Image 1 (tube, rainbow, N blue to C red):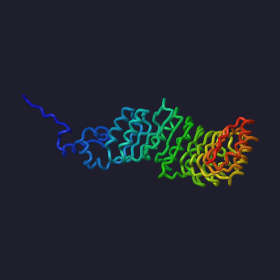
Image 2: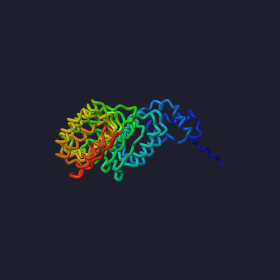
Image 3: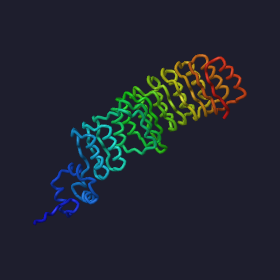
Length: 355
């Protein structure tokens, strides 16, 4: 009775496995042998041909979610690949999710081309990516998905490590996205974002209604770029600039926005450094603005006299119904009677207290 010898990659000598690999193309090795077992992983890591693999292109290969899952498994172990092309396949939401999870472990892939797939995003309306450490390849994947999304209305990137190049990818995505209405962007303390890229992102979006820039450091130059776009923006209704380093110089730019902008209804300037020096410009803006409903000036350095002038300005012409002067340089006793009489005769709600 003859005995048969069963050969296995798990037990074959390394040199014999090398001989087998010599007869396979690199894409086949990547698809079928990554993460099979620890021994084979070690062999692949030492195989000369595979150590030089840095780019694979699977464009128009009919790759589905199942194929993307297999790719994701391979990517988790691979340490050589820097560019992967997956354009024009049949990868949908689940496959994209597998790839995103794999990228959390893979630290070498730099470029992932995944445009023209079939991301449907049928159920996701809010995506919170706050406090996340992105790599450029992940941001590109996010931007591609954002371009195709038909349901995502809120995107939060608060305290992430998003940089200027990342903002450019997102702004290009916003140009094609027609549903996103709310963008929360709070820069990580170690990042400095060029406001020209934020300006471009705002300009290219036709649907954004709420922009939250709270806790970002905004310079005079940054203010100018953002204000330039907001002056004639026709979609944004809510702008949050709380704690953004705005002083009188920056406030002059935003006062000019209030003169020409026809859609902004809510503006939050809480916890900045606004003083009486920009009062004339702000009073002029409020007298000519016809859309602003709520203005929050809490935690600035506005005096009693200027607060009274601002209140008189909105009483005369504007539709403002909410004005917050809390924690300013206001004498409660001097202004209490004035504001009380003001509120009795109007529908405006005014909050005020000393610092």
